[in-house]
Image 1 (cartoon, rainbow, N blue to C red):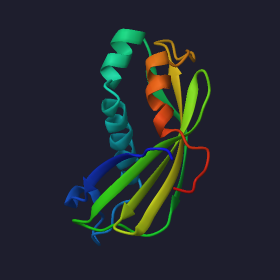
Image 2 (cartoon, rainbow, N blue to C red):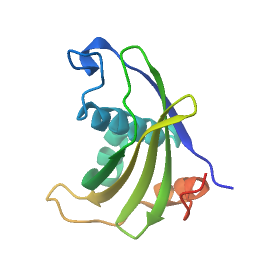
Image 3 (cartoon, rainbow, N blue to C red):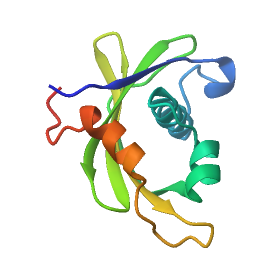
Image 4 (cartoon, one colour):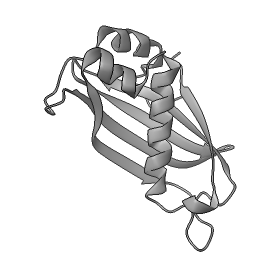
Amino acid sequence: MHKNFVHKVKVYYEDTDAGGVVYYANYLNFLERARTEAINNIGLSNKKIKENFGALIIVKSCNIDYKKSAHLEDELNIRSFVKSITKTSFSMMQIISREQDIIAEAKVHLVFVNNLGKPVKIPDIIFDNFKPYFCDSINI
């Protein structure tokens, strides 16, 4: 069984529209925070990756399927795991939920690039540390 990175988010007023519903684009912020915490969880950071490996992690594509709305002061869980990985990129599945309700599911394709924007090999330490979080099936 694979592991999930789990990040908790509380919905603040700034995250919502006038009706108290999370504005759709703010889910991207929640997903980004969860990915950043996933990297921190394996002992690295985006800053360390840039300094130590000369690489940045960029989003190549993101596909979000919105299932339900989240609201002001909801406590959300974001589960993230690696769906697939290549020498220079990986795809993560990220699931935003409130208790048992799935709010949104996202597939995010991320690429390691150098400072010129050219793809580079994922550092072995990241590849190795992501292995427990790799799952080739959406069933979790």
